[in-house]
Image 1 (cartoon, rainbow, N blue to C red):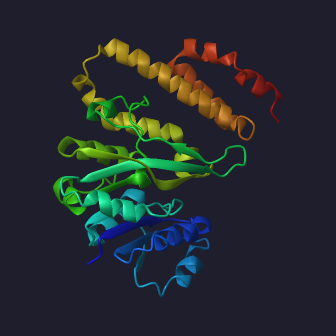
Image 2: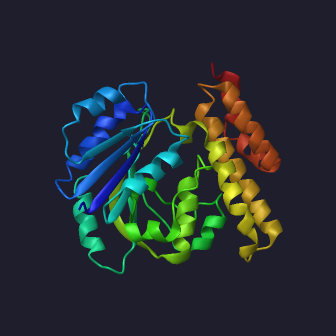
Length: 296
């Protein structure tokens, strides 16, 4: 039986998939299975997977699905390993990740491990950067707009028993299903932090998350707003904090796309204004409006 089950949902990420597959093989640990759930990709994914068809550790399922959550759930149902690894088709593991995990999980009292990630960007303006993970209090999830929780999905690993206890992903969620899953986990389990880089996360500009960051935020609110009453702060204080932070999020998104997509930039700017006009007026002095005037 494999010790690690690596689950990779796949859809039209063929240009990155080779690196993902290679990073698992280069762990030099024979005790794993790698389950690819591909949603009938139409790019070079088919050719990439064909080149790996003789890998005895690889299992490939190609069939339609209703999104990433359903694809991951298919992998979770098939997984036979003790340790579950969710690795998207544009992410990778650095060397020695499996060795470190074997050592950590040798402690039977540890059920969930999370670590840091190196984020790699498509554009040449940003060099790879290590992002430190952060999580201490499960109620910080409820303040989903803040940076109190910083968990990197490919750098989180958990035992099979966790799935048996809390179930699968909610398939109606498409942008923040991972955070909802961690929220359910945190009710019953302790998250063990390892100050090591455990994953390489690709931040491609045309990814679902990057292109629709506002949808990520809206889905997080849908998930966690029913729990606002669990927080001790006054509702008015939380609303003010939420509005200011969201305005900043939308302004940053507007900055990031103003030179390439003015329509999207205006959309983000309007969202920021709806959240906190005062915050927008403060940030306008940093040059966003100037960017609108002079960007082509």
